[in-house]
Length: 252
Image (cartoon, rainbow, N blue to C red; front, side, top):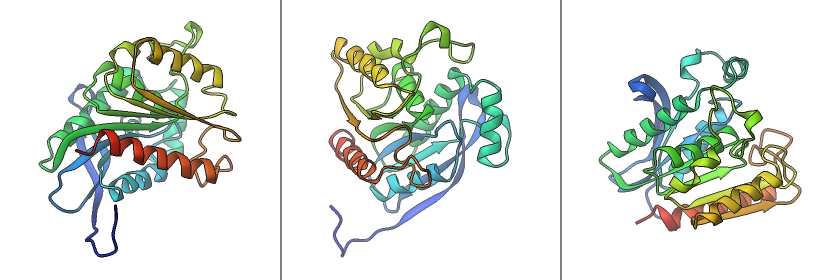
């Protein structure tokens, strides 16, 4: 718990890291000052891009005591405004799952190379980032906590599969070893409440540790204070759920 007499400081900058296939990409890295040890967080940006909200989120996690890295999954597409780059990614049909998982795995390796890590790492994502967080937890493991915020297309029909998204992340549920936190709006259309129910049933089927919270009067992206879909009460409760969850599973 924070007290008014304690030291507080933060280090934050853009860094280079090794992503999928050993390729160098950029990432935003924020951590508390001091020797630690600190738990680590990999945070995965949403489909609209590697934008300001995710840099702010990285600093927010660092403020709460986590060494946090946010890899730019769109690095290979080119550079420009987050909106322009995201539009190109959308035109390309999204980034391949293999690339996203490789970049997330590389971000976790970056954190594990830091001398002040406490040995625990979580993964967090919203929108497509929630999907990628779940996918990475099922495919490469090595995470101690998974947070999926309204991740669409975790549950995918055969018609939704593409060369970039060849397997539904749901299929990897048996491989997930870490506890999962899910935050969802009941007005969302991707994932729909029915999709969330299917995901929960799969986690139950395989005896996974999880907690889901469904919010009334909230749709997709209800954390995004700069958009009309922001819901203040639900967002505050969601963040509090996140801090409680991470405190339980990452702080040693």
